[in-house]
Structures are given as C-alpha cells and as structure tokens.
Image 1 (cartoon, rainbow over the protein chains, first blue to last red):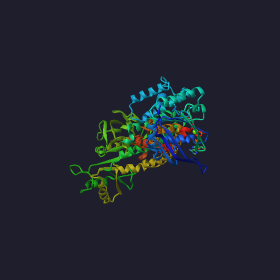
Image 2: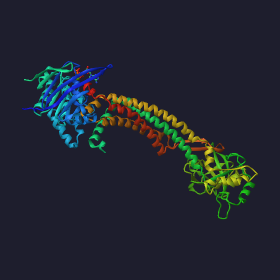
Image 3: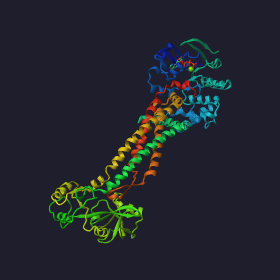
Image 4: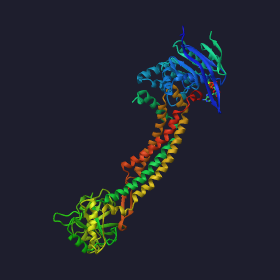
Length: 233
Length: 397
Ligand SMILES: Nc1ncnc2c1ncn2[C@@H]1O[C@H](COP(=O)(O)OP(=O)(O)OP(=O)(O)O)[C@@H](O)[C@H]1O
Ligand SMILES: [Mg+2]
C-alpha cells in the first residue's frame, strides 16, 4: 500500500519549555518531525523526555512556544483555544492511558460523546455508536457502566469513542500502560487494524517495546530530540 | 443564536447531566449548600411576611381620603374628647372645609367612641358610630347580614373576629352589662378594622354610660390634599384644641413604624446570611469542579467547548440553589402563611394580623436564593473552563 508522500503532520523548529520553580525548563528546543498520512508511529523514551508533551501539542491541548505545527491543512500553532477545540472535535480521536470514561455514563453514552459535537440526528448517532461498538467487539455492552468492565474492555470503549466520529488521526498516550499482556495485545491488534484497514494515522506513546512492534516505525525521544528511528520489518 | 446552536446545546446538556448525575458523590456538601439557601429564604420570607402582614392590617385600615378629628390635644383616639358644642359649631360652619357634604349641605360625619370590652377573656374594641359610619370607611364590605339598626343593641363583627370568637349571625354576646345580637359580618380585606366590633353610637353610649361622649369624628375629604383646609377651619375653634389627621396616618402612627422596623431588621440579617451561603456555595462548587477535574478535562480534550464546561458547573450551582429555594419557599409558606400574630393596638385592645407570604415575597426571597447560586457558582464555573487540559492525559480517570 502506497502512503501519501506529502507529510500529513509536520513539526518544524518546535520549542517548548515549562516553568518549574521559577526556572524555565526547556523540553524541546527545535524539534522537527514529519509523519505521512496512514503512518503508525510509536514514540518511546525515558520518563520526562517529553512524549506526552509532544502528544498534547499534536492534540492541540498544549501549544508550542515557537515553531510551526501543521496537521493536514491546519496550522495548530496559530489557532486559538476555541478553534483548536473545534478542530479536535472534527479531526482526531484521543485514547487515554486511564481510559478516561465518564463513570456516570454507560458505554454507549461514553462512545457517543464526540458525536454530540456534530450535527447528527439521534438516530444517526445511535447507528454510529452501534457500528463502532461492533468494531471493537463490544456490541451488547451498550448499557454497561465503566465500573462494571475490565480494563481491556474499558480501553476498547475508549478506542470506540476515539474513532466514532471517523477522524483521520488517532493519538494514544500509553494506551496499554494499564493493561495486562493479553488485553494489551487485543488493544494493539485493534490499533493495527484501524491503521491497516481503515487507514487511520496513529501516533502512540508507549513504554512497552512489545507494543512498539505493532507500529510501522518507532521514534525514540531523549532529551528533547529523536535519537533513533526504527522501521518495522 | 449561534451560541445555542444544537451542538452547543447538546454539549451543555451532557455536561449538565454528568454534573448532576455525579451529585451523589458530593451529596453531603451539595445538600448543605441547598439547605443553607433554604435557610436564607426562610429567614427572609419570615421577616418580610411579618412586615407585610402587619402593614396589610394597618394600611388596609387607613385611607388618605378619610379625616379623623380628635380633640383635647391628643393625636390618637385614646384620650381624645370632642365636646358636643364643638360638634354643633362644626355642623354650623359653612364654606368649603375640604370635606364632603350631603345634598342638603350637611357635613357627612360619624361621631365615634371606642369602648374596650371583654369577650372570652380577651379585650376587644367595641366602636360605637353613627349609622353613616360604615360608609365613611374605604374597603369595607358586608360579608353577611346587615349593619346595626339605629338605637338597637346589635353589632357587626369583623370577619376575623367572627371566625376566631365564633360570633355567628344571630348569636348573642354579652358586652358590658347587656346582651348584643350579631346583625352582620364585615370584611375589611384583613385590615385592622376586622379586629373591631361595630355598633350604634347611642346604643354603646347607653350600655356603657358614656352619654354625650364623642371621641372622634370621621369625615370624608373631598381630596386627600384638603386635610390642611379642614385643619384651618378647626383652628378657628378655640374651645378645645382640635387636630385632623388622615385615617391612614392615624393607623400608621398607632403601629409606629413596626413594618419598616421588621424589614430593617430582616433584610440585613438575611443578606448577611446570604453572604455566608454564597461563600458556602462557592466552596461547594469549587469542590465539585475539583471532583470532576478529570471528567471536565477529558470532554474538553474530546473537543467540548469552554462554554459547556462553564454551563455545566454553573447550572449545577443554580440547580442546587433552586432546590434550596423550593425547599425554603415551601417551608416558609407552610410555616408562615396565615400564621396569626397579634399585637396590642389602641385602647389596649388586640389587633390581629396575619403573616402574609405574598407572591412578591416568594419572588423576592426566591431571587435572593437563586442569586446565591448564580454568584456562588460563577467563579467555580470559570475555574472549570480554565482547567489545564493536559491533566486529562496525565491523571488516572
Ligand atoms: N504542565 C506542566 N507544567 C510544568 N512542567 C511540565 C508540565 N507538563 C510536563 N512538564 C514537564 O515536562 C517534562 C516532560 O513531561 P512529559 O509528560 O511530556 O514527559 P513524558 O515523556 O510523557 O514522561 P512519562 O513517560 O513519565 O509520561 C517533565 O519534566 C515534566 O515534569
Ligand atoms: Mg507521559
């Protein structure tokens, strides 16, 4: 399968620093990265190397201090808060390490959340929710609440929620960090399926070398820069 | 209205729903917020309905178009005395005195005396008046029977007293040394008049040995402003000092400034409590935001707007305050409305009044309660919009 040549995600000269105890701690000082459409990138690196910061910037949750950050035709670094919110709603799905399901909503309602941001009828929303729950192998679990589900099931709900509005990009911050091996493999299989069959571009932060094997390539982040790149066989 | 376009509304609705359904997690503090609002509402409603009831009784009794002439240098009925010669002089006066005359040019006036009488161990005011007396009063309607017949030992009884003392139509009641028959009931829209018994002047004088006595003279003014003109005419009579006061002022003076005094106490107390309750609401809602940090940040990360985060928290505060308001209003209505209170009026007789929880009072206190939620919730709601979203990815949900 041939990937687009033009980069889908492009980071050029990204700078980011956090103020920690009065001092500015640089995380990135001129980070460059391009990711083509349809890629599945695993980002690894020691704790504190800036993996989550990178992912948050891609998600538009955090902003670079300087540099250009474009995804598709959008310049995230130039957008305001409200614009980035709206952009997130239409262009990406996020999978969280701790699933971040709302405990007072059942599985179907949790999955439905991103659809509420779109001009869809109730019926359309229900159909879409059914379709993705089927995709993650949890049809029949609509009425269950997160507290009644295993970690693996909750994360599959999390993935269903991330893809329900059919975004082109999936961002996952340690999606298997809280799962046992078997559940982790199920989740990773699913991500690979989404990448291979549904052509989602995926950026996944992980500590787990096994997880990284599911990706098309692995980037190693250290001291604010990529030190190594490994392509899957 | 782009702000409430359907997706915004849906976002807000979900936020509100998740907030409200997570309320049980914060039950104690949320309930205490609602209760503190309810308490403020109750206290204010109590004070206001007391003031209202009192004013209703007294203001209803007094009209600005009725003048009461008092003699002997007093400005209240007790101790007032108008000699018969003065009344003759007044009747003989011609010219525009600012008061209503009948077709024959005679003054329309009612001579009156008030006698304290004991009914069932309680002191009531028995008012003797000329036959025209009831008509020189505003807002009086006969609710049953007829007025007393001239010279007869008949009384008409205010509705309030009739109910309280069981003075039914045709009943006889012993006042002083003789029996009186209840000829009618009158309503004065709950005013202080209803705390009186009315009878024929001569019958009262005869029964209580007050021959020839007149305490006050009621006249109908052609215009509320013509009280001064009447006073000018009265000043020409030198036999005894005479004053003309409007009936409204007479009753208002009798009550002192009780109504406003009650309010003067009530409002600051209620407002102070409201400030406390607002601080409590602020605290409650801050804890609600803290409790939902991850949830708020998560949906915001999914693309939910700041507005929805704001509304979710704010409306939770308003809903809690509303619950308090409803509880408080219901409680005050149950507790206060129609609650009989009484105070000592003129001649040491009882003046009954009813606490009145009016629509205005419900509205005022309800708005104060809501304001507690609106103000107390605004800052935490703002805080909810300012949560750093990065926490959503970091924290354990
Ligand atoms: N909001 C923030 N305020 C201050 N410092 C921050 C903030 N977010 C991240 N940092 C700091 O930036 C650095 C990079 O953090 P980041 O979370 O990106 O690391 P990470 O690679 O994801 O680590 P981990 O593997 O532990 O998740 C860390 O030193 C962290 O303390
Ligand atoms: Mg991290």
